[in-house]
Length: 222
Image 1 (cartoon, helix red, strand yellow):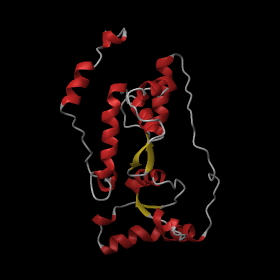
Image 2 (cartoon, helix red, strand yellow):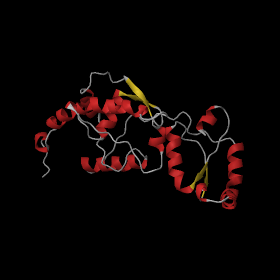
Image 3 (cartoon, helix red, strand yellow):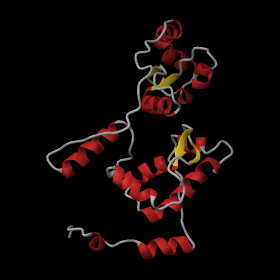
Image 4 (tube, one colour):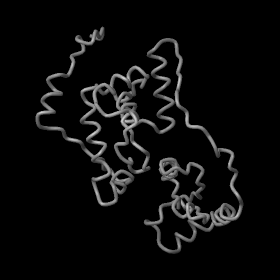
């Protein structure tokens, strides 16, 4: 639908109710967060022709309206936020607030995210000789530009270390090459599947041997 919109023609997808969240996430990923869609209650592949008609007819007027009425473009020209600030009773509370907000934005998968502060990102950048603005690849499925610095920001949020950066960058480079369509079918599927990265050889042994123990980092956690 987004490709049709880019051709200058109005397009409105019909979405089954249980996939409404997926549709919103996909439209954001492909750079058109204001794409409008009509929601119907049932999934078509499980319906016979008569049931399909009953599923669609109540949404027909809304579909026609979306195709014929100009959308409000209030979000045009929105600036991408460069920095986020979170405050709490203490640092731990601030991190929890950050995680709550990022999960609401669909920026996490439920695992605890670490603050990607400027110092944390700079530390990760020290683990590679590539400049921060070096473009590694177009990142599927949304084809965002994956620079070394952006990879470092995401790696910092995941709790990575500088020595992990070469492996992470290599893994990012591999994602667009997974399948003929650049990994889109795998990364966007609603089926229970996900890519798995297995690291072996000398680099795996090196990273394992250099992995810092909690007490080496001054942790007070028992």
